[in-house]
Length: 439
Image (cartoon, rainbow, N blue to C red; front, side, top):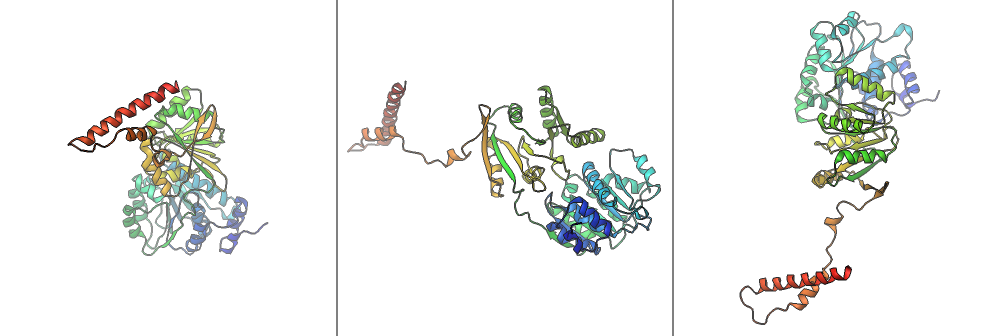
């Protein structure tokens, strides 16, 4: 078995075996900086973008530290969305299956939108590790079904999104039922000011690892701008879709209403598309995620729910039906493609009103290509700023008119206005002559 560089850490043998089978060879930057601290039980803040390996930066050391002989909850992991919580739990199961039968680590996933009584019934025996959404975990603690008062490690994944979605109160409630000296591991793409008081409350002197991406987006993403030119965007989207051959594409809209309208339009045109946004019922979201996993769709219409944390495999194209209000979400959206060294394409529809936002993205390091479909083929077009950057060439009719209209020797009040009127008159005459010649 080929050695991996994870063997430099004091991880248990089953973790190393899992790492081999997962195909990991060298730790990512965030893993290098946080695995040693997490193994020692230190609190830490990891700031990095999606796709940097942060999930395994905490799973590997925390699973290694769990003592299967202790019959109580030792690790609590919270995530802002049901899909992300499920995804993390699946990664836990991929690792723990390499344990021997006598040393099994019990893990459970508890998320909103599922039968709470069934969740309570599953807790007759306390798991070693719990993953879930903050609201459901907090409910189970209130019901005295889940006992976390001995749990030594608490993970808050996508903390800035927790804040945005209003979950920080539930996270605080969970933390308040855990012991003093708690190891807290917080992972976030950004650290907003409003998050800092919460961090100070639980973390006296945390290790801080900020991993700046070498590039703001993956190197192998092609960023394409497509001018909408006041066309109906649904028609434009359908045209683009008929001239792509994606493995899987996500079309991002800013609101649930817009996503619903796009999906209805495309369905009416005979396209089979998936729909993913926060307005779906838990059952509908679960069904869509299963259909996506079973490759039933080539196109998914989504809001930014799918841009953060949810790992949809095999996305070859991202289409921004509209630019996000928060430009950081452009990075999150396009981060769904070109993962794990693959290539991908991010297409963005734009109008003249989007110019300021596009300039800001370019200042962030995004390099766009400009394209449109002409006669059924993709064509590169001139840079959208070509017109405003173009130096005006002197108008020939201007030159002729100025030669014919001479400044009078004796000037009287209003002479400039009269000269300008005469110049405009001659210019009109010259243009009419040119027009007749052209016909």
